[in-house]
Each structure stands twice: as C-alpha cells, then as structure tokens.
Image (cartoon, rainbow, N blue to C red; front, side, top):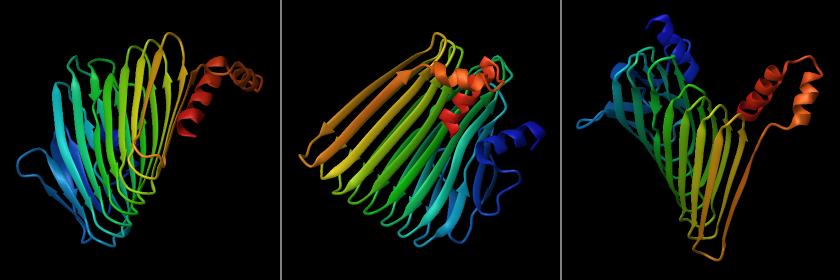
Amino acid sequence: MNKLEKKLLEKISDLHTMPSGAFNIRKNGQLFDRASTKEIEITPKKNKNGINIKIKDGTKNKSVHIPVIITVGGLNDLVYNDFYIGKDCDVLIVAGCGIHNATCKTSLHSGIHSFHVGQNSKVRYVEKHIAEGKSGDKILNPITKIVLQKNSFMQIETLQLDGVTSSLRKTIARLGEGATLKVQENISTSEQQWTKTYFKVLLAGRDSRAEIVSHSVAKGRSFQEFKSNLIGQELCFGHVECDGIMMDEARIVSVPMIDAQNSNSSLIHEAAIGKIASDELIKLMSLGLSKEEAENMIIEGFLLG
C-alpha cells in the first residue's frame, strides 16, 4: 500500500500495520489480503462478491478486521459479508470504508452485512465511514441485518464524517429471548450532502431489549433523515433517542414509529433537534477560542464524546 492507502486504512480501522488476528482487507473492489485463525475462519463466497466469517463456539477476546478502501473513481463496489458467531463468544468486529476520490467519476461502496449471533455471545461491532477528495461523488450505502439468539448481546458503534456525498443506511434486527441490541450512531454532513438512516427492530423474545442513540450534525445545506421502527411482540423494552444539531441552512427530519403488539411492551422514542447553545459558545470563546474553534470543539464532543 502507498501512503494514502495506509492513511485511509488507519482512519477507518485504527490499523497501523497488518493485524495479527483474522482479517480481510478489500482495496478498490478486489481482495488485498486475508488471514484466518483457528478460532475465526474467513472464506470467499462462491456465487457473489463477499466473505463468510465463522467464529467458533467459546471464542473470547478475539477480533476480526474487514476494512474496505477505495482510491479510484468510477467504481461500483458491492459486497455481501455474513458473520456466523457461535455460542458463548466475546469478540470485536471492525469494519468500515474509506474513500479518496480525486476524479470526476463516482465512487460507490455498498456493504451488506448479516450477523447471526449465537446464544450467550457478546459482539462489539465498530464501523467507520470516511470520504476525502474534492472531485467526484463518494457514496456509501451500508445495510446491516442482525439475528440475536437467546441471551446474546450486540453493541454497534457507527461513525460517518463529512465528505460522504450521500448515504442510505439500513439496520434490520430480530431479537430473541433475553437478547440485547445497543446502537450508537454518529453522523456529520456538510455542503449539499445527504444521509438517510432507517432502523427496524423486532423485539420478538421475552425480556429482549433495544437501545438506539443517534447523534448528528448537519451543516451547510445538507440534509439528514432518521427513521426508526420499534416493534414489540413480547415483554420487552425499546428506546430510541435522536439528537441533532443544525447549522447554516441544513435540515434534519426525524420520523419515529412504535408498534406495541403486546401490553407488556415498553417502547420509547425521543427526538431533539436544534442549534448550538449560545451560552456554550460564549463560555468557550471567553477562554480564548474563536467562534469557529468553539463550534468545532462542541461538535467533536457531541459526536465523539
């Protein structure tokens, strides 16, 4: 990899060198390098682009990295990655895509990930989306499908920063008995960029639980839309929180939907959209920061704090 490619890889996956565990690195629509371990097996799909990742029962304190980098224009990259996590596991999965497009052509990556999480397993999933370059469009369309079995736990941390021209983000999940899904989504848009996010979570099992928190900042003339659909079929708890900061001429839309199909379902949606509080700006500016520096500090704390 050249310096640009190494820098992109570091930004989306915090990798300074090749990882020592299981990994699959994709570069400009092709496999760059791949490695499996005795606990985590990665194999290519036979009939379409993508990989199968199988994690054995009882695998703990292990990680797998599957980053994608794109440094060319005119690429339409579509991949299907399926994770099969066994019982009693505790693993970290790091994904994400970094695009650097300096051409007048569009660069597009669509990653369709499915997770089958076994009983009593714990998964932390980190996904970062970053785009650079002043020329062509940089489009990212992630789709995440999740099935959580009895007493399993999945934590999702997603980050999308300025530079992504447009993105359509979908997460669909089904939770079994005692299963828990926690999501922390952080999105920033600027200029005329747009992002649409959609969550559909089926709380099918007794004592299942879903907590979805979305923090977003919209600047320039960008547009963001957040839609959520919580469906409670059993004794369960679901909570969605959507907080947005608008600046300049940006627009944010939040559309909640709650479907309680059982009298023991407890479903909550909260939304707050507004601008940066003037007292916060004044306090930081009194410490010697310019208005722009103060705004950037508040935004960084809101998104990454």
